[in-house]
Amino acid sequence: MQLARQYNVLLIGDSCTDVWAYGSCKRLSPEAPVPVMKYRETQSAPGMAANVNANLTSLGINVNFLTNKETITKTRYIDEKSNYQVMRLDNEPKVKPLREAELRMAAMHLEYDAVVISDYDKGFVDINLLDILAPRNPDVKIFVDTKKKKLPTQYPNVIYKINRKEFELLDPDHIPNGKNMIVTSGALGALWDHQTFPVPITRVFDVSGAGDTFLAALVFYYIQLPDLKESINFANRCAAIAVQNPGTYTLKMEDVDEILL
Image (tube, rainbow, N blue to C red; front, side, top):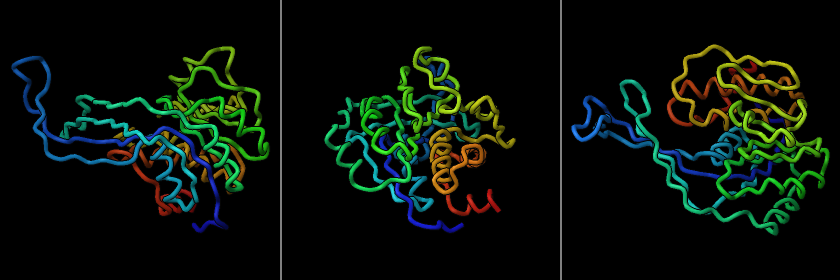
């Protein structure tokens, strides 16, 4: 597939480094009923909003990316034989929030085809930044993946992508209507506007970053063909590709061609 033109996206969100420490677990510790891992190797990849950025960039989108300067690390310890995650260790320094002046400057920099907010609630994103972004150009869709419990609902150009667990924790007085919210449920697919979108049956190897893949794929498709139904179907198929691979997976144009052709 070849893009018809250069597309521009403003991406705002919390980033981390995802780390996988692989080894073998063949015995329990004599000190506590926990497995002992014999370490073999470590792999790492951009995580959270940085994973969304990696996917959009890989698919040829020009991304203006605003993210935290602090280094957040998520380290997963994996038994290679079973692919079982023994534990996860998160290192989360205090994150400085995005400055309003920086946001306003970025919003003025280019004419964007879409705005994407990947909000892992680590401190970089204030959800009220929608008050600046949404009215500026009501014809530009803003795609928001957030863990916040209170969501602004007054902007028709904002589309929320929320997983089922986060949806159930939302403040009932701050829930967007069905046409402005996509609820993802892993193997059960996605729900939008009272419609269910199934995912292909596939062998799941690792779900790390699957939501980021879904978000990037949704935006990639929508800015070219603004049909939310088809965009969700496409994003589901891309997420199904991601979970078949270890770690976070970066979509390639070959994956797009395989899905669309």
